[in-house]
Length: 391
Ligand SMILES: *Cc1c(COP(=O)(O)O)cnc(C)c1O
Image: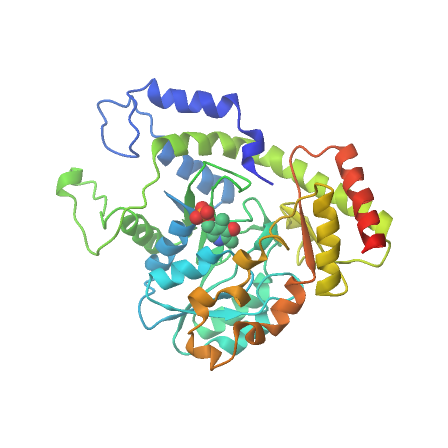
C-alpha cells in the first residue's frame, strides 16, 4: 500500500543534496545559489516520462491537484461536475472550491463509476466528469470516455489511489484530458504531502501551472518580478524537499508495484482456497493493470460484513477504508456537503445512493503491503476462515 514502507537512505540523501547545494527550498529562482539543483522540476519531468504524459506539474496535495485541474478546465460557478459516490471527500471538495455543482453517480461492482448512471446524469450544464480509480483499479474507462466524448464533456481522472495502475495498456491518469495524483503519506508513492497534475494538452498544462502559482505565466522573456499574467490564481507550489523525495520514490515504484501485485495475487489465492466459491470478489475491468493496492470481497449482507469485519479487527487485521472509514469515502453519508443538493429533491442521500450503499456496505477491503510475507498472508486467510465460520 504505502510508499512510507520503503522510505530510506535514498530519500535522506536526496534531501541532503538540497541542503548541500545552497539549501534553496523554493522550486524556482535563486539560480546563483542552487548549483543547478531543481528537484521539483526534475520530479515533474521524470513523472511525465514514466507515464508517457506530455506534461506534469507538481502541487502541494492531491486535493490541490484536483482543484488546479478543474481550474485548468475552466470549471466555475453554474457548471456541473460529475463524480462517483465512492471516493475520498477531496474530490467533491475540489468541485465545491470552484463554485461548481457536484453531481454524483452510483458505483457498480468495480466500486468505481457506473457508466450507465453517468449517461443518465449528464446535462447541458455538465462541464467535466471525474472518474476515480479507487484502490488502484481502473474505472470502466472505455465506456466513460465514449459517453463523455459523445456529449462534449472533459474527463479528469482522479488517480490519487492508482499511481502505476494501467487500463488496456494505458497508464491511469493519461486516458482522459487531464489526470491528478496524490503523494500523501498513505499513497503508493509518497512525498509526505504532495500532488501532480498530468496532461497531454499544452493549454491545460499552462492553465494548471499558472493557476497553481498566482497566475504567473512563467514568461521566459522576463524576470519573475516582471512576469506577465492573464488570469488570477493561487499558491499550490510544491517545495524542493518534496521533489527530492518524490524522485527517489519514483525510482522505487516499479519494484514496489511488482511486489504489491504479487502479494495481492498470493492473498487472493489464499482466501479463495479457504473460502471456495462463497466469496464474491470485486469486478476488475483490466486485471493486468491493477496496481495491487487492496483486495476487496463482498459478504452476503451488510450485517454479515459488519460481523466479519469486527471479528477480523479483534484479531488485529486492518482494512483499507472499507468498512472502517466508509463515512469518509461514501457520498451517501456526506450530508455536510451534499445534503442540500437540488438533485436530491427532498430525498435522503441514503435513498438516492441505494445501489452504491448496497454494494459498499457489503464490502471488506484488505490493504496490501509491500512488506507482507507468506506467513502473514497465510495468517490473514486463517483468521478470515475463522471469522466467516463464526459470524
Ligand atoms: C488521497 C486522495 C485524494 C486527496 O489527496 P491528498 O494528497 O490527501 O490531498 C483525492 N482523491 C482520492 C481518491 C484520494 O484517495
